[in-house]
Amino acid sequence: MKKFLLETKELLLSQWVIAVLAIIQVRIVAGNLGPEIYGNIGVYLGFVGISFRLLSSRNSDLILMNFKSTTLNFLYSSLLFELMLGSFSLFFVFGIFYLYYGFIPEYLLLYFFTRIFLNFLEVFKGVFTHKGNMKIYSYVESSSNIVRFILVVSFITINPSISSYFYALSFYQIFVTILVLILLLTNNNNIGMKMNFKDYLKLSKDSFFKIRTDQAVGLIPIHLDVVVIGYFSNYYSAGVYRIAKKLVEPVNSLVVAFSPWMLNKIDSKNNYSFRDLTLKILIPSSVVIALAYLLFGKKLIEIIAGREFSDSYMPMLILAVGYIAYYLTFWTRHYLLLNNLILEHTKGRLVNLLVFMITSPLLIPSYGFNGIAISISFSIIFQKLYEINAYYKNRNIKNNN
Image (cartoon, rainbow, N blue to C red; front, side, top):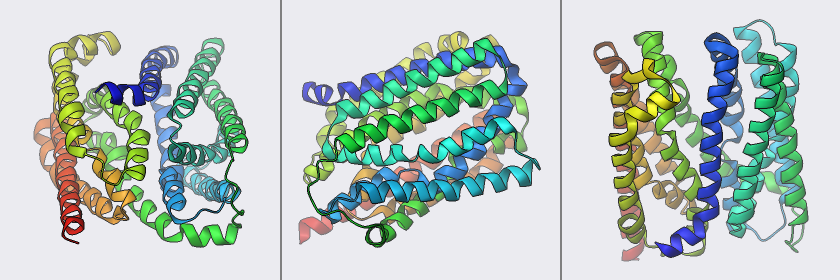
């Protein structure tokens, strides 16, 4: 436990800072802009998020897999690759906005163009995870979120408008782009021959399409759950569920914090003991998390969202079951990825999607926000059961060889 905390303390601290700032920012932005504009921002961010995540989400994994396949220096080619993907995403998001709205507000143009270069963050994450430099990794995570918080709060306080919010995010993206480029270029210590862009595309092709398929399958439950409950129930239920989901996201923050450390451990130690990790770290911390939600959940809802969202308590507890199940077994994805079994993870996400699509329309009409919370938790649990089974199958094959 002591060694684990020493190795992950910077990552845990950075995620704690991010979580606290996110909660404060939500209160300030929503309070100044009101529910309608705040909801409009959410829709815009959803469209942009889907457009760029479709091609670039988790491309840090691609960097890690490429490091395992070559000793050549591919930094510049990887940056050019992310720039190309960002440009494709830009055309995609333009198309979505013109189809859905018929126009693009001027204040979104700068945000769209600067979002292209935020893809460089994926290269940074992959490179510094490979290096095992969790300190710089966590400093960039926390400092960039602090800058975003300062910019958003300042712009909204001076001029409470939707345009101010997106101008703030645009300057945040410029800051992150410059920061990660400086760190990547100054820490480019690979003395190997530089890989040209054409060879980089050949190297990345198979892994890229596997990762993209995996990410595309997971977009629906992650991004459309609030839309689904709004469709099958009502907007009140959607609002109650959204608050419940926001309050269990700190569990996912722990997964985000531990993931770079876990990837580095699996990469350097193929015989890493997941049993010790689960028994000594994950299970004890899960008990603490579960008790915290059970005992202090209602008070937490009152402080962050207000008493009018007290109905969020039960869906929050239901979602916590699924999120804790994911936390207990978060390492399965990383093991499958680094053992060239990412398609098994994709199949697990397909199981997740199928369970969600079958159970949500059956449960929501009768149980509303509790129904979709049950659906999401069931989906997560069935996905992780599939991944654990894939892990044991692969481990048994290795032991028999």
